[in-house]
Image (cartoon, rainbow, N blue to C red):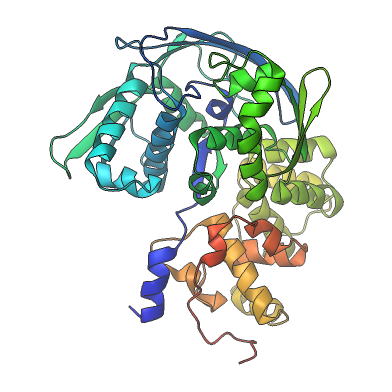
Length: 433
């Protein structure tokens, strides 16, 4: 392995993260710094606007024998376990892992308190029972199974003895349903770690899920926001108090480019100006370039990952499939049905013709934006400077960004660690050396 490639391996971003869709707005952890004893069952009943439409959430959180409900820091542990399952393509009912894998994802030190912290988090999550009283809907509109009203995110936990011992969690029915429905969305894992506070991370997750279909403005009343963030039982009895508590978290989200601003409207409404650059621009491209009707464009973004949509868009223009008379309708079906992507054998050469028109700085920026959107495979080919070494998907995504004038710097964002990913230098065809 070359010196450059070794250096790249050390500071590549995590494989593109994944988050639950329905569970991201279903509060099952509390905004407390430390768990407290015996705070008993908690009801959460509120309305939230998701993908431009109101959705009612009604649930009761019931702690286990300890009487202690999970906190947002436990949610981070749960998300780390999800990343392990997704990265391994492991959707079985039991996940086998080692503690160090979780520590690495969460950037925890390999110390005794980390072991205790992980074990206690898993115990609280396994003890939690969730009574869901409203319909739980996946991002593509399908409902979660209703065979039982009492649900779990983790059914049981086994913690092996010894620092490098094997551990296991048996997923609860809610997670297994999410796996069955494929009810997941993209998640900027580097960003969620960089936010540095579990409550900030939870606020980011709620906003990101609520605006999945490309909205750049999102409104929610103060009481619903408090409940969605698990804060209703933590001293936020007035909107002024909630504003005061959340102000530092708003500022962090602004600094990391998640939101532009937050306004408080008389009557108790928070109005978020959400950056949402990729989804907003993608929705605009669908409607203006591909003639997809507005509601259909909203449904595509709400129901399917951004990369899936970009791949089908690129293949429609640059692929080897027959060109349809109605691009909008065809594209909608291509995304929904997952049409096979087909390209001519000389596709890498035609990509290089476009690539060669860009400056060195533009190539670097688009390359890093592609890495951020797709993550990096184990072979690290995506880090090579020569696009002919990339996967077909990487070239397709980058070509989409270039051809439709999406700004790579906007995609990378002011707080993105992806901007620091070193690119392994190759002799780039068409590049000025």
